[in-house]
Image (cartoon, rainbow, N blue to C red):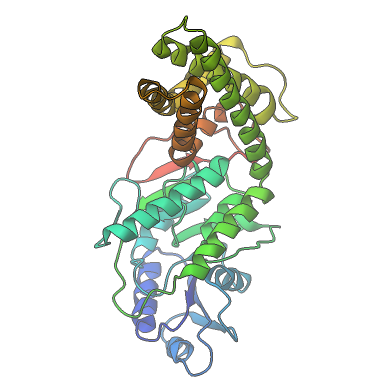
Amino acid sequence: MISLVIPTYQESDVIEATLRRAAAALARTGEEYELIVVDDSGPGDPTAARAEALAPEIPVRVVQRARRQGLATAVVEGWKAARGDVWGVMDADLQHPPEVVVRLMEALRRPGVDIAIASRHVKGGASLRWPRRRRAVSWASTHLAACVLPWTLARVRDPMSGMFLMRARVLEGIELNPLGYKILLEVLGCGHWRGLAEVPYGFERRGLGHSKLGWRQSAEYLVHLLQLARATGQLRTWLRYATVGLSGALLDVGIFYLLVGGGTWHPAAAVAVAIELALLSNFAWNQTLTFRRSEDLGPLPPARLLRVLLSYQRACLAGAILNAAVTIGSIARGVTPALAAALGVVAGGVWNLVFNVPRIWQSWACTLPPRAGQPPSRRAEAAPVNTLPGKVRW
């Protein structure tokens, strides 16, 4: 049985159309189903009453809350009332086409798939008629999540999706503590799942009503990411990673200064040596300190260690090139060697921090032994439906 939760806040203009389309789509799956509307609109708004009026025609139940408490907590409230063995969620405003639920259920029936996500970022997916600013904000939010939670989200193309189905057992024994509106982050970070599938869809522009997102929701999103980083242990890993990065930056500046300060090395050769030695130092410390777990059985075989090193070097290449370009350019403008190297390190470090953290961390994914029920991570090919392996919990 499918239990689909639809959180609402002042959606009276569209709720009837949403429920009818969702019911028709769920009926096409061939499964029993129920619709659970969790309404935060409060007294005076007819959203809940209009949903309840459809109960004689379609299997819908309404859970009313006294005040607005956030989308994610509304979804959790709905799942607590669910009777099905498949749980899901979608928005009430028809930006999520209800018909996508048919393909989500088809994906969930695949062996090893515990979560099926409606995705804008796989082949065939899109954010239809979105202005550039909205697209930029969406990309930044998605990338930020992947940077803060690399182990959990680096292989998920659309972790910000608000429409998905999952097997109820994913959350068995889990006490969720969501904040804000991105419930999928909580599920991916805390749930027990082996693999997932992403199904393409076109995210529509809102037809009726208005967006409920504001500065408060953005702040809650940032706090939620930090909570998940702490809960999954990735915050501790981040602190070790940052410490190693600082040591490499100091090594880079020191070596460049020693080589160029005496006038015996050309800046181009010196910066190449300094950057490479700093990268090798970072790799060694990350391998032994940052990305090691107590259940590691011992040192990696040389061939496997070499593959990890090459993957790490490829991931850092763009930042290294930017580092070298800024350093040499600064020297050409008369900047002292130490300051020039420092400027290069900052430029390359910012590049890696902003754009490259998930890829750098994933260099070590194949070295981490899986925990119970979690296969090691591996690269997934882009496809209309992408089935990805389970996360590695740190």
